[in-house]
Length: 316
Image (cartoon, rainbow, N blue to C red):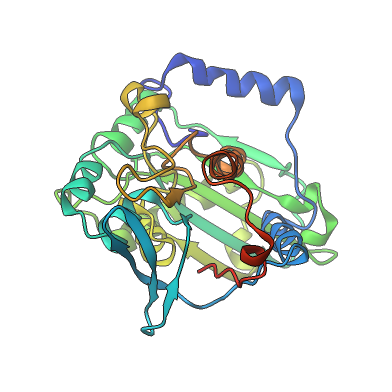
């Protein structure tokens, strides 16, 4: 499930993930996961990168065998010598490029699960919780069938609760807690009846029951803030195809050479990063994806000239 896969279907190689965690430990970014984003932005800006925020891209303009630039939703056109698309790769093909046949082929591939998320602020500390807390369903295998075959929420879902203040005091004010709950669920499927309001309510009830089972029955009474995500959120806010929180799946035909490559086969100056290209999903792998794409660009295009480095670089 680190990769949004059923452990009963995933290639056995991925069992190495648990080993590496147990032996090597887990890195935690002080200041929260978003500190990774702000740190990268600070490093980029120190090297002259200019970010253009709140500028969603409407399409990528193409000319023959090259991508010529991007057009923003407000109509602004940005010419480009080279484009790196870090949106979910299937979304780039389906919504930003003109080739419908390629987009349709990607839509038929297998996708990872999604997740219903709850972000809670509470006005007390729950010492029953550690940094990482996993609750496993009794009908473990059947629960994965509900996620990956039926594309819905299991009757008794397994779930994960994170209490970051146990490792990082800045994650919550003194005497309070912040909690994040992740409940795996099937991705969006037009062929399946999916009432996300009802499924979210049921996931919330299951999370509160799990907390009550370890001696924290009053979490709902102490909530001071609540934000929730469903697969619809992943699709609408983050352009993740089918609301699949982990991108394209990692079955044997969608890894390595068979996974969508990090350069477009026709538009040779259009590159990709993210979970749906090489090497795969998860924050470490996505950061590695950016490095691999950068190394490929430097190898194929070369380092930018001083004149090119002086030009503004826009990221949307």
